[in-house]
Length: 248
Image 1 (cartoon, rainbow, N blue to C red):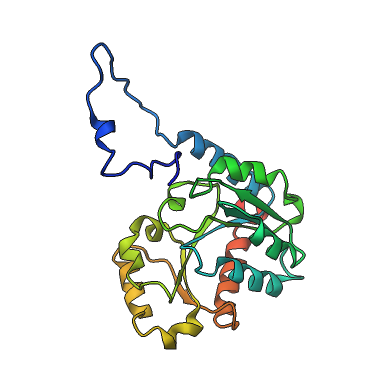
Image 2: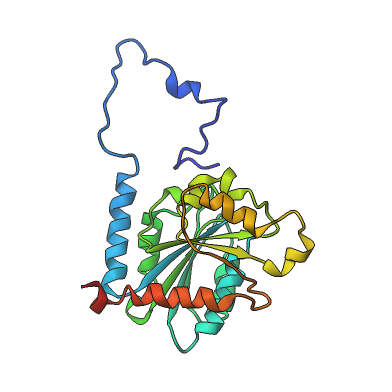
């Protein structure tokens, strides 16, 4: 799908990577990780967040799991108590950023073109357009994709993964990299659960625990304001941990 994270390498073309070098050519041993440049930029971003006492939350999910709707409900609830900025990631359009700005919140849209994830360099550029000194939380709504986004450190403090009940409850088993990275799993669109008799929250949590992930699991519906209180309490607790006086 993209040319940066290796996800365009398939079983059909992998042999091109494995073929021996041409006569006269040599191999170069690489001692530095391929993502080292991204990781250095991510550390820089995190230091930037820490210096301002800002909690950075990376929201990840499959397309359509309800990330933007969750953000909209969260912004409305936090108004007057915590100041929020948003970085939006999509392949095209500013649609989600427009939705966020309509709530009176600064939002920067990153359009990635063919890339199926955000990286630390994109986030660094976006931070120049956000008033960090006037914010308490920055949400990073990653590109809808259960594969690549979890592989890139953006400088965030926490990964929050949404799994909607309209998806399979075996998603954690199918996409272990994403769910292994979760610091919190939100089971979204829980209001539709009576209609989705093939989705069992207990099975989803069992699949998560099979990955040795002890992250909390919270069911919620942003549309119907169900289960929002535990999510907001989690945010407030994580943000308090980022305050400079407590970090020193």
